[in-house]
Length: 156
Image (cartoon, rainbow, N blue to C red):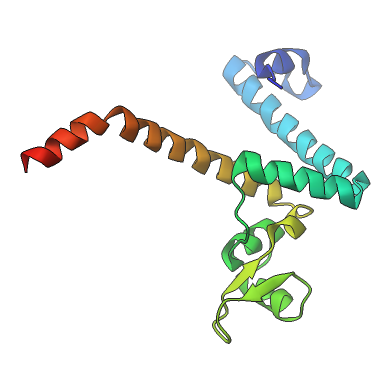
């Protein structure tokens, strides 16, 4: 599904931007307002998903955005919106589905599917998408320049 953001921005005309002179500023404000509305809609839609729907959604999101099998305490803290220490406590108490990597180390492998309901999930997925694009760009660059790299290595 391809979304034409220009068409969406043209159709979205909130009263708040009527007195803004700059078109660039208007578009920016509209995007910020749309982002807020999207976050509200994501939360609303998540609430009505069945467990089967959540499972299917997660599996698809995981494939599309290269979500890892587990996330770090730091990532979980950003997603949930709490401190890493609080996440460790949630892991230790069993509230979060997690496995400690080494007894007493404070390092945990946290199952990401359970984090979909938290406010930072969309941002985490967005960051994973950016990493995926960067990785593909690096791979494409390396592939496109493999001959040059091999020539440089052969000269040494």
